[in-house]
Length: 353
Image (cartoon, rainbow, N blue to C red; front, side, top):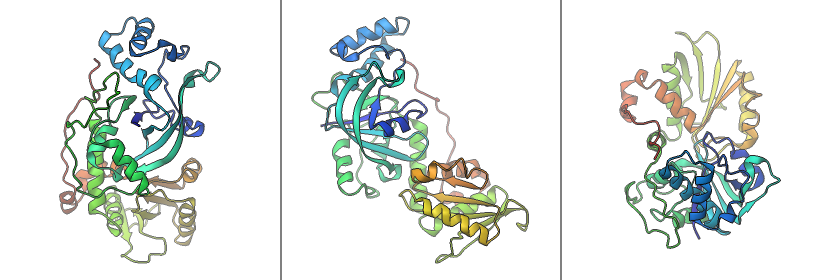
C-alpha cells in the first residue's frame, strides 16, 4: 500500500469535482486525447511528452513524467490519497477503489482518473506534525509520500478518529528522508515545498496553542481593535451567543454594528450555529455578523456564503491568520510577544527545471 499526494489544480479549481465524482483526475493540459496507459511505462510517458511538448526543456519533461507515470501505472486499489485544500486549512483523505482509467467520452479536462472513496474531506491542518505538513506542501501535482513513515502515521490517525497528534511528538527535520518505497519507479524527490504554506502552518499551530478557548475571542477582539473598531468582549463562561460586540469610532456608536461569535474547536461547525447567530444579531440590534470558527465550516454553510455576503462574514483559521498578519504591526506589544513574527523574502515559486 502507498500514500499519494494529488492536487486538484493550481488554484484548487477541481476540488468539488473530485469530491462529487468520488475520483481524482489528472488534469494535465495537452494530454486529454491520449490514453496514457498505452504508453506502457515511465519511458513511454517521456516519449509521449516529448511528442506533445517538443519545445520544453528535457529536464522539465522528466519532471512532468515523474508525476504522470505514477498516476497512470503505480496508484492501486487500497492505496490512500492526500489532497490539501487550496482555500481552507484542511486536508482531504481517500482510499483508491480503482486504478487509472481513460474515458474518451468524458469532459475533456476529466478523462484521466482514479476512483476514490473519500474517507474525510476536512481534516484540519493543525492536526498534523510539521514534518508531514512539509511533505503535504511539496510543489508536485502527484507524488508518493514516502518520508517520515507518513502512510503509517496517517492510517493510525484515521483509526483514532482523525484526532490531532500530540504536540511536540518526535518529528524528523524537513530534509530527512524516510525509507523509500521498494517499487517507487521512477524515484520522486520532494526537493521543493511551499515555503509560505509551511510558515503559515507554524504560525497556525502557535496561535492554536496560545489562544485556546476564550483566548481565541480575545485575539479576534484585538484584531478588530487594530482595524479601528471599539469592542466589548464577553467574560469567560455562558455568553448568550455573544462573544464580541464591535462598531467603529471612539465609543462604538457608528455602523456597522457587528455581533461576533468565536468557536475555537478544530472541527467544522454545523449550519445551526450560523442560524443561531442570526437570531442573536436581531436581539442586540446588530447590522452585521462575524462567525469565526478555527476548524472551518460544513459544506451546508459554505454553499450559502454568497447569500450571506452582505450580512455575515465567515472566518476560518486561514482567514483569521490573514487578518492577524494584516494588522500585526498595530497590535499591542504584549500580544506581539505571544506571536513573535518577522518578515522574510523568498522566491514566489521554485525555479523551472
